[in-house]
Image 1 (cartoon, rainbow, N blue to C red):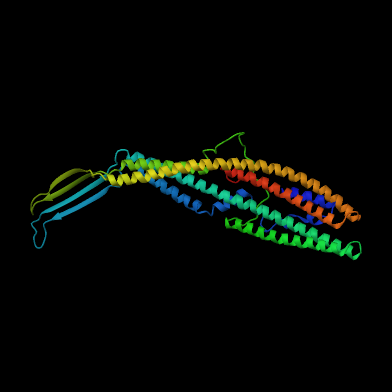
Image 2 (image 1 turned 45 degrees about the vertical axis):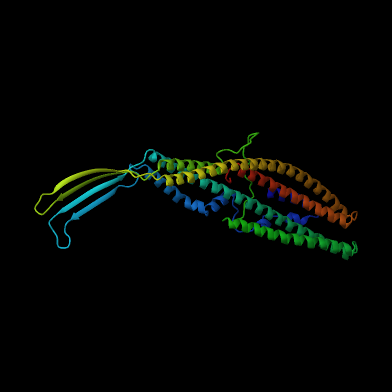
Length: 419
């Protein structure tokens, strides 16, 4: 876009006094020695630094391990029990001995194993959707900072071009004042225009620096490339965002996770029952042979209704919250999508109008500039047209950027990552 703008400025300067605008080149725009990067490359660099991206592999592994634990054949790992009994005590020793070896196995409650497996699967899906939603939110922040930097850099280049053009005009007016062709008041007007251009250039440089720092805060230290995102294909009419939108997927998985937690809590009314198997050998006194015993036991804990009700209430509240957030987010995204589409339509109309204004201002500037050289127009007319031509070119350049930014905002509203 800036390449086309530079071409237009060169054409303008060929027959007009806007020589300064023709100096708007890549060197005036480049702020770093490194080559510019695309928005997609900037997103990859920024995402690699985010906490969500760094912690995602560990969270995935934790969810997988929980799934493995839910698929084992016992509710908890088995317990090995060892025992030794003797009558040896304070000088007594009749030879009574007992040795035992047992294994205790916690059992799944009815439906608990299936609910635990379903919960582990839901947690793994929630990890993935949280990561995708975090990437989408980062994309929104990056897009905003990206186009703010583009706009600030464009303003800086235009302000510098205007400063050079005003300086050239001031020198020309001073020469003609010295020759007696113009009054000293005309020189004052030209100097005032130059002072205003310098002030605008200083403010534009400050804005450009702030925009660059905002990009660096996101992990992007290289200048953005002047390439817009592609316009996505849109249906002629749509009212709601796609359910595959990262923000909706995150809330859907959060709701599913709450449902699975409540289902698991419903099966956990008491502690796990425990099956025990033990073998022992014992003798009553010295010289007696050891006898062997085999025992099989089942431990059934009593209920814990208060604890179960607390778990059910917690899971139920999480489910209600997730459902409400999902409905609100669906409505918000629908409004954001409609607004982004309207913004794109308005940006395209504004760009067409700005192009027409720039063309007319360029032609008018050529007429007045030639008339001023021939002494047929006064300086105020020349200054007025000079400013109008600059503002028209500035509006066209910024309107082009606004259109690119509107496309980017539409892609953000659709849940698409930078491309």
